[in-house]
Length: 105
Image (cartoon, rainbow, N blue to C red):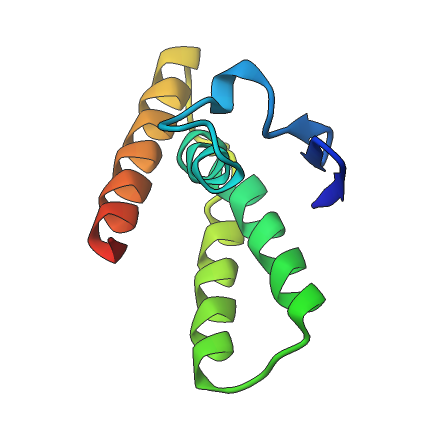
């Protein structure tokens, strides 16, 4: 995730764009919105890049890497027959991420 001044981008997406305006609009809240709204493959890539950036290791990082692997496997559904099926799947993923984030608070 690039960060220069008020710009905070990842893979061509800027968390200061309107779709990511959440709560107080802070960078942390915008990142939460990004994690909730984007597809699992995008979230997994971001999390993997963040883990690479921190360079840490240990049990917690290993658990995070397992989560990243699961998110990356859960990319676009090649069996989805319609746009509505794909949107339904994205909506379910967003609900699941929202519930997981709520449990962290």
